[in-house]
Image (cartoon, rainbow, N blue to C red; front, side):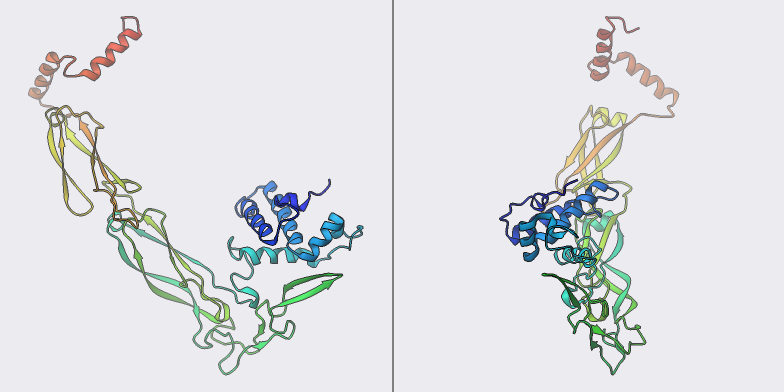
Length: 379
């Protein structure tokens, strides 16, 4: 099966510049990355094609060879300038790391750059709060076990009184270059792992890593109006980087406990208030507690049916980063009497005998439609 044209794979014209190539690659790689399409063989194949196409077209020399010889330029034994050998595949991952870094969490040099300084890992902390705390906001104190910079070696990884020496293989660059024909391929230095330095006498406290594990106490400001699943980022509060590299970030994931009285939809609150059958028939006034510690009065008009909702404006949740408030919706639930006395039963029977379509319009209308449906004889 003939290979697809690299320009066609990326969806760009042959005259596309480097910026257009990079933009097209970013978009497609994000769409078909295996981490976003687990178990999808077709997406995985497209991702490989996209990677291969960009690896060729983003390099001026390789692009020129492809424009002249096509795919044969990169096939062993082909009519072009020859194949790439075993180092070719490894350079593809380097290109992806250069552009995306740790977007998908799997980069080898996580924000470290050419010097190979590995940025510390991001950490996650799950924090559960009540609905009242989400309403008012909260200043929470949390304890997080994490890696911090080693004080004994100041994060260098070398024993006190010594220091790392420049790597002799890469000359401190962290990268080595291999040349094949007129192609030059750059890879991470195998001796220093891309750090550019070698530690001959490692610190005994951190074993040369430049960091140790400790429990840290941090303060987290939870703003009013947060919802379940809200994420708060504390920059630089994650795991310390290796040998003095920048620290990662700490992400606080919030979960709001279910409330015994309210349910929530965005900034709006909902609750159900039971009222007696008599109160629903004659009308009444009920008081509902609100999250600000006060009460709100609701007038229940006579003849209120079960399920009727009453809206209290600005009595819901605060809207995050806004001065506005949501609303509180109160649903009336008419309660049917139970455990009646003989006299109560007699009174209800008298009421039923004297009732008409005017006192129970919905039930009267319903049975009238049933009668019409069965041709005048519901039985």
